[in-house]
Amino acid sequence: MNYVIIGNSVAAVGAIRGIRTIDTTGNITVISRESHTAYGRPLISYLLGGTVTEKRMAYLPEGFYEQHRVNLLLNSEAVAVDPAKKQIKLASGDSIPFDRLLIATGGDPFVPPIEGLAGKEQVFTFTTWDDAAKLKGLAADIDRVVVIGGGLIGLKAAEGLHQLGKRITIIELADRILSAAFDRTAGRIVAKKMKANGIDVITEDTVVKVEGEGVGITGVTLKSGDFVPCDTVVVAIGVRPAAGFLKGSKVEINRGIVVNDAMETSVKGIFAAGDVTEARDFFSASKNPMPIWPDAYIQGDIAGVTMAGGTKSYDGGLAMNSIELFKVPTISMGITNPAEPKEYEILTWLDQESYQYRKVVLQGNIVVGAVLVGNVERAGIFAGLIREKVDTTQFRDKLLAPDFGFIHLTREIRDALFAPVGKVA
Image (tube, rainbow, N blue to C red):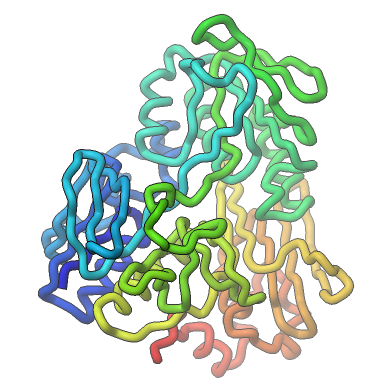
């Protein structure tokens, strides 16, 4: 069997391991447009700030690709897929045949058509190792930075630049930072911490023009009419599934590549996993993109097992976001901002001075969402309670307690929380 994986992040790693649990002899080829072996993408802000070295970026054991007999093609970009001929065309002009194909290309940063942005030299995105390295290499030429976007990517870029001593302003269109993943209170706490460290945060506004002559930047003009001086712009509005090379392949793409619970696409023999996909949501069963690091690994593992002839099924993605800023850890999971609040009960506890916050969202006696700021040690328990739909009647009065943990759960519940995430048929 000839397996080909396009992309080399965490979903690919899960797939390689999944394939090898079933098929120990088949050929595995991994195509990556990056020049690095698989690395921890959440670490790129620390690489930028200098708190993590390049040697610590890799998260796989040395010899992983050799041990799993993987033919790794770095600096190689897939530009087309022909399902009929079962071939992948590379930018180099070469073609690679496949029997089973996994698309694990992740997301590409979205750069909006802002007036004056095109042609400027010091405009960056921030999603890869090379993005961080490029920013770090030009650090001596950077003084003031505007980060467009107050989500996870934008805040980590801001933190890394702050560690280099740069002056930073974050511009966010929503009424708070982290609006997509966290609630208003958590957003305010994080904004307070950012401001305490000298980072300016402007909300409910957006950049409409990048000012400056030629390739240089002097600042940005906001929709409100305000002008923010800067010499560098980091665009961190979000990502889009990197699936443009599938045009004409008949692989169904909506907001991402649509897959079933075996991670197979609309074309037999072609699978997808990770940020590029649109898979089943844990709560609604509708198909949604789920750009979550652990979820990508789970999807990759399921795809790998299925590609190799095994049977494994996806339980649905649980929205989960984690970020630590200036030593304040935060995690959100599940339904954190219910569209119909009357259907839910919301429990909260707040100590704003110490940057501590806890929110638990209940539907009946079932936990369906949680936000933890400052103390996230029990996050795994909350994720388990959500996934296993555990009845919390016996301990719901303890959910907000700082010491809430396994001691409050019955033996049966503890066993359930340690059950495998992917169910084997």
